[in-house]
Image (cartoon, rainbow, N blue to C red; front, side, top):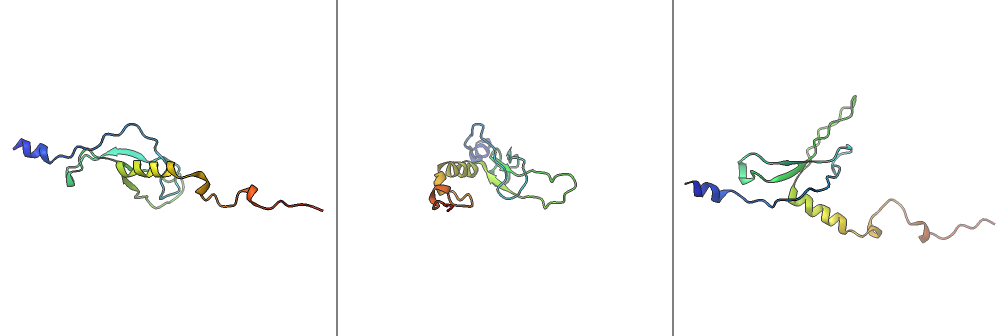
Length: 105
């Protein structure tokens, strides 16, 4: 009986310390929080995730952010972002050496 209980538990991939980025869904400055699921629901007990727990600045009323990612998905997103060549990123304008020179006469 105890074997069926232990057999139903998932063995989640343990992750080393990771950089925690800002939330991609809101403008708050605090990094995401790394947490561990403690509920037995859906067999996720012990599974790690990141969540936005940012609080609005004093005096501001902001909608609560509901950002949530399983840690495995977060790691994959970080890998994808790290592999994106910088020349393909859009920084909001062309590079100055790609523009024709401006000559004053």
